[in-house]
Image (cartoon, rainbow, N blue to C red; front, side, top):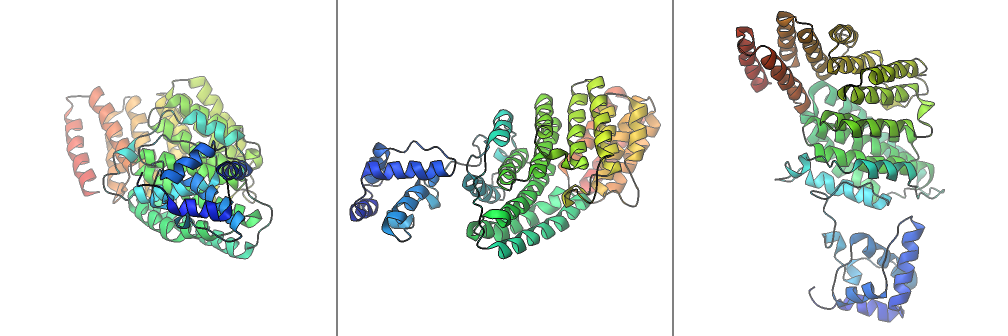
Length: 456
């Protein structure tokens, strides 16, 4: 504390607002938004003595006092410094939680994009929070949204949403072509300088408000993928979770399902296989997700991937079958535009990964072949699938073929900047070195791979 907050005390006295009356109004305003605050007259007394309230509480106090005054009172008018960081919950290093309030989700996204470019953020934003999944699932499935029904600025917001989606589509194409390492900074710049001001200034209500939140969720999930592809797993998890809250506010169950599938994919990648199953199945339980056969197929494919990682061959095969059945019911005209990438080759690629992990080389090779269209498949996807095929050949006992396939993957990857791609290479090296530790063909490949990864 720096001493009594005389500005807050003066405003209370001028407005003839008692501590108990203000506390009650703050709680009412929070409850209206679906939030629960424990602010009482004792807390108000602490703020009068100089303690700074948390950001959310400070904003509700300012709202309550502005109502009473009949004019707008800023946090600075009340001597509060919440917008300058006082009593703020840190994004970096804090537990990952599903935000109950949409304002918290948007604020957290803004804080995260700043932290994501700050020096020294690599380590704390590289850690996945393994305890977050149950709360995220519960928060999304059973939480509510708070948008009003009217929209005073619909036309402007629809234009903003269209701009965000158009830019996201172009950056997504770059991400597929060059990897998250190339696109991350572009995405961060666009989000911080173009999107956050829109979120802060727009009257996000009604259909236009939902469209804005949906478009922002789509962009935030791409930020999550770029962070994931760059090995910043804590950042990626947070982007996905905060975007999930935006999708809930947008009343967009298909985007919500997509984000849960992203979290499942990431959990499986870092070895949290049971959480990956739970997240995929949570997506399957969302009412309305079956409006898109492609989205339903994606969720079943994520479940199959996680079950394969757990060694559950029958369960994984059954989930793949459900994915194929759902995919055949799709209607591209009714699918959201962002799922257009998930075609027959993508589904085949997910199946190839499953059979690789189940050590079934025949099926691995069969689906890996179906997963690549040379003139269409993006370089990163092609590199992933080719290395999956190399592992399949290795499991079949074909060392020469396996090494040759892996060489081809490294040769064609070019300037790909992707932590995941490097992980695929290192995983292949670990397997082939364990199976053939002294073979000169492996020694030569190790030298070749070091050079290829260095120049790439």
